[in-house]
Image (cartoon, rainbow, N blue to C red):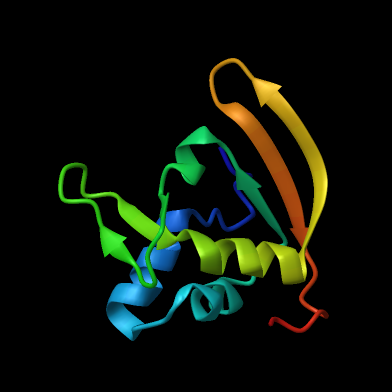
Length: 103
């Protein structure tokens, strides 16, 4: 649960920017400018080996291009924390450095 005085952004915000504005993953992340990205088993399950956003026909959940996401983290993310939780699997916390240039 997010703090009441902070905007809580989820991966579904990226789907919104893609659907209504045609943004790719990089453009969507630049639009919402998260300070941190937290990945877990569920979030990593939304990644797929494709080149654009899709919606999973079975669940209706957004799916994101794995390679583009990994490139973004490699170029602008700094891993701050990693641990394993019995409910959520491997959790990784990346701080995003917006002063770095994306590849």
